[in-house]
Image 1 (tube, rainbow, N blue to C red):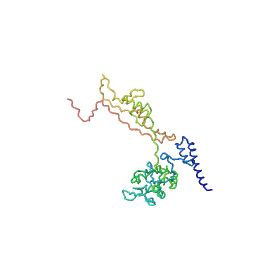
Image 2 (image 1 turned 60 degrees about the horizontal axis):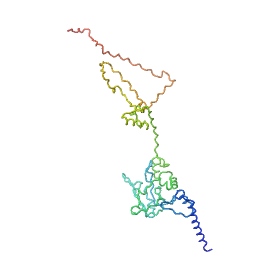
Image 3 (image 1 turned 120 degrees about the vertical axis):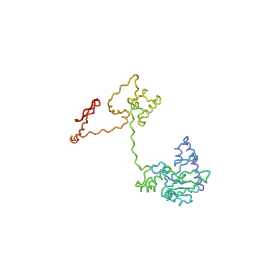
Image 4 (image 1 turned 120 degrees about the horizontal axis):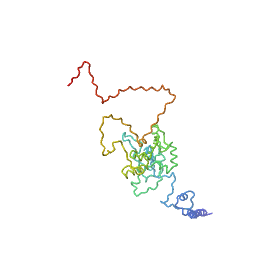
Length: 364
């Protein structure tokens, strides 16, 4: 029948028109929520709707292509921070249909030989046709197609020619916008690192690739924290305890007492007085010094360890006792020391030694 197709087309239009109002009633009061936005953009959306751009943006597919960008290692990579994946081979510039890519290969300042790093890299985004040939032919996965399509500006002469600094983005950015593609490329490479980096690692005797942005150096063993000094020792000797051995609450209490009174005090507020030998004692008024007698100086006593020094000193291991089955004869006998002559008495008169044939001394 003539005109049946027109009636069917108009019926579809009328169906969408009715479903638009029914869908608005269904999502009444929830229009601005993220779940509503994702449902209306998916296959479950019904009716006709308008995206309020730029407040609302339709999610682009993972394989969406726009201006290319250069992939680099992450800036916080422990082994290759910020290193370019591009080796300036020039394949992308050769296969580019509109010829919008310019590359200047870097050279070694010492030898003058070329090195696999781009010194300059330019792309004219006004000429780029977003075909993706550069990303398809790159053997090092160093150039990929971006999802950023909002690139309009008022100056197309300088702003639309992207240099190396504008084109470089970290590998984590590519893994965020295209996680499935990034995982497939990683499996094809045989690891996380770029293929040229894998060759360098094999020459250095390292594994071909890392599982991720990790370090090849072994992790250092954690340093055990020093034991905290007891409160009694800190209160008695506040100025002799290192700061790293004092708990925060102890340090705050000691510093508060010193700043308020000018000297260290205990928890009860009593000043701490430390005595260091007899030199610090004041002379008693009215006391007369006794006559000095020629006496022999006594040996100095061994210094007694203070509680602070005892707490800070490392504990020495106790020597193990010898086994009981060792014969007594195995231990060498101690050699007796030769006896020393008795010390001379300085108070006795000196003994006069005379010869037999010598005349007696003359008397005055």
